[in-house]
Amino acid sequence: MSCALNDHRLTLIHLLNLVDCICTMLALSSGVEELNPLMRMTIEEFGIMAFVLIKVFVVSVAATMLGQMLKPQERWPLTGLVAVQGTVVAWHVFGLLLI
Image 1 (cartoon, rainbow, N blue to C red):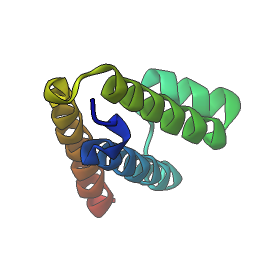
Image 2 (cartoon, rainbow, N blue to C red; image 1 turned 180 degrees about the vertical axis):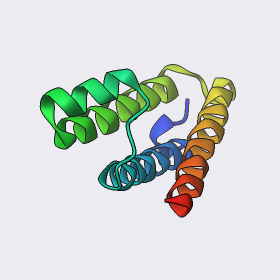
Image 3 (tube, helix red, strand yellow; image 1 turned 45 degrees about the horizontal axis):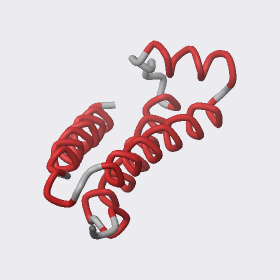
């Protein structure tokens, strides 16, 4: 079985997640409200650094675990995650252009 960590989709998921996090912080600094109620509560209760740590940690661990649990021929859900994360980033960029 090949190593999931060599899967370029995992790298893309991690990079897109970081871009999502940066875009979220830019939007928040411009006065936009976080729409995710769990993340909004995290920011309000514990601050922006807690948001960053939780967001990056949870997505990274979940995606890596998924990649490691699946056989190479079964890793197609990673392609879906790249598409979802890419759509989220595109939405952020579009929104930031409107601010």
